[in-house]
Length: 207
Image (tube, rainbow, N blue to C red; front, side):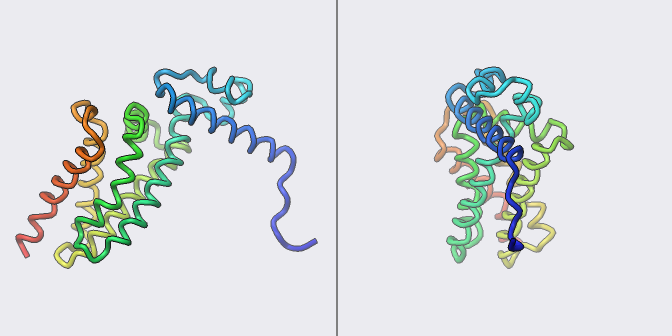
């Protein structure tokens, strides 16, 4: 035999298939009804697995939501980074906005799910594996913003890291605060853009 990857065993294939069914069921039901309108039993039923089997993959409904949202969050960051790279040469503000646009749209795709997801990442157990993965994605977003800010000749590396944390806080508040829920994505993004512009302006005035 060659030295390629060993074939996956039947048991492992069955586990992967169950996980995919659970993820698909959770994704569909959360999209249809929101996290508060879905039970783990409904997810298990749609995935055609026993409730005990579902708990082997995620012990709570919150963990199921995090599993689903992590995939969406990761994709939105990938899209945002590509858009930011395409906007290089337009100053620093436009690439940052290009990066965060798909992230904001992802979090507001279903506002209840997005708000609950961020709440669980911030206030849940950081040692839980799915939350760890979500927090790693948040770090990746922050690192991406930091990298864009360091391209500005007036912002040094230390300030860029601090400003990136400020910008991610702006995103968090703007996508979770109840007062912003009735607003369109474009209105929220415009407000975030203005806040980022104001946050960066002192560095350019000082220069």
